Length: 231
Image 1 (spheres, rainbow, N blue to C red):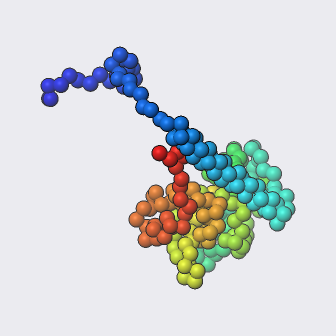
Image 2: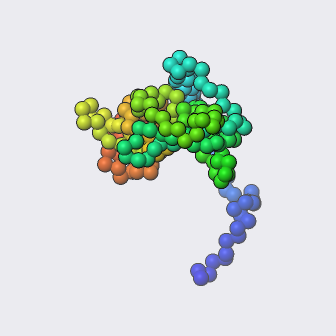
Image 3: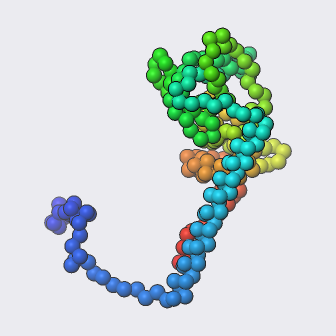
């Protein structure tokens, strides 16, 4: 109740050019040249980072193939078994094959979406936890590969759940949830590896946990973000 006329919501979409005051600002040629130079440099850095990230992923896939040979070629429509960890304390390094499931989608980093044939529920599963359906393997218990924590070249970070300091190196370690793997298979990874290959996951972790006890140490270990154009 201010006595002022009510705002017209249409003005947000449409404007009357006659009601706008137009002014000009003189920008020197040196300032324009400097801004263009800063922009070109920033774009070059961005493109370089993207190219480096792409090349790193390619090397990762090549290394994975050289170590494990040819990976199974799962495709949409295939019926598969899915390995799920045995949650009993005495069997924490075991998983049991369940199924059958049907593959309904494929993703990067050897991740697949599978559908439960009874409930219709879907979930993402890494290819290391899938094998082609075979009746004799249903509900058979196998041992989880012990080198999982040390062999992450063909896995993709879904999110970082926690951070801690390594007692010997004083570097930060990250508790990683891997895409396509269960929560029980989260693992602690060296900070240098995550900073090099998945810096975006660290920034996202800090945005969700700004008051984490090691947030200042984590922030100090990350590269500085540069602005596109300097004023």
